[in-house]
Length: 522
Ligand code: ME8
Image 1 (spheres, helix red, strand yellow):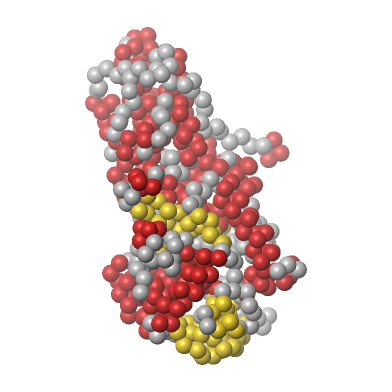
Image 2 (cartoon, protein in one colour):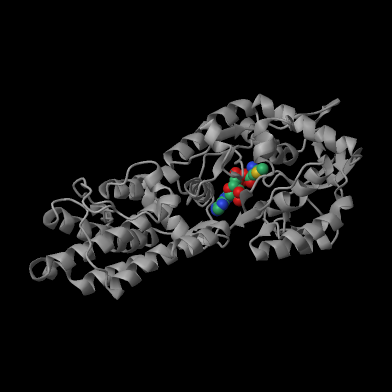
């Protein structure tokens, strides 16, 4: 593995690291699933992937929540970080490391980036006086806040309460990076989708103030090197996790040289500013290469409503998996919500996707063709005869999926890629129905064999391409097509057709219909 991986192009992808002040919800699940889909896609496409996820455990929010619950911040972090990791495992997330910002190597990395920024002359001691939102772990200018009717001051953007904060603080010379940041958005794009880039660019164009990067009123954080009265502002250490995950500060180490800069940071739109303004500025200051891409996805709502603990509509991902199955849930999230836009989860939405796209379209196509093969072709891949123009068109439609699907994945346009694949599935269903192989069984068995072979070939191509999204179901589909695990399932094998005569295992349904539990039926 170590030898072969060095021949492959590295690809480093990360999720945001979640605050373990509570347990994970479906919004967290959405982000790790989408990132997992991207990581799996790249692995199947021959890349040497490193995938990092984890928890962001410092800061005032953690400390305050812990106090309320009668725990130490460390105890709260230990308890809830484990819940995030369990969720990742239950969602079949193929991470290479689950990082905790309380890991020892992360303290070393955070101290090292601080020292680098200090050596660059970008850190100075001053006094912060302004508004702070503990919920957002963010500083806001007066103009970014408003007085609510009940007299509480809130962030205009996020609605969270802000408190007046005055303390000695180290500052980062963010104002010095304005032009370099604007050039970055101009030349490289950097932030995606486009709407987010425009938002970020106009925020930066409106002028940047230096950023307070340490706190003295609590101690749950990474100590500032050389001044133990201060802990780092949680976002300084949080963002640095992406470097820790590849061995920083050992910049000569194999992992760092191989995987940094990251190819993609996948995050939610609410934290675009931290990733697209502060993070590149910190890295420029520290003399480190910038990540290639920040993709800010949208928010997931429960039937159009914002999920919140007080409303009581927070969805537990484990409950959704138990109800619908993991792969159907993964498919729904990726197919239903255009990545980058907000989306809504609903029972009917999931049910419809399961029953139409998975059970009716792909499941039925596989089931119809494979059961005919089992009955009429002695359970072996049929021997195709001469191909008609219809056969060729059908095969071409499947063969032509890979290039555009790959291009859409590279832009994180997952819903487009799936839509495209399902157009071919629909075409294959029409082809199968029009060719009426069940009639050919008597009239022209050779022609029947050809139609079945063509159909299985389309199912094979689709099965390979959908592995990132529905890994277990696709594996079962490729099993019943007799495709060996390993190289036959990589994208490199897309062009290697089914071998006539290969013995197939007995067909088994891969995408069951969703049946309403009796209690929910009207
Ligand atoms: O922001 N829909 O942590 P977090 C979609 N620790 N995505 C959602 C969501 C929703 N309803 N709610 C949250 C933090 N997210 C920081 C990140 S990174 C160095 C530090 C997303 O637990 C959110 O946008 O509040 C973020 O990307 C991730 O879940 C973790 O959110």
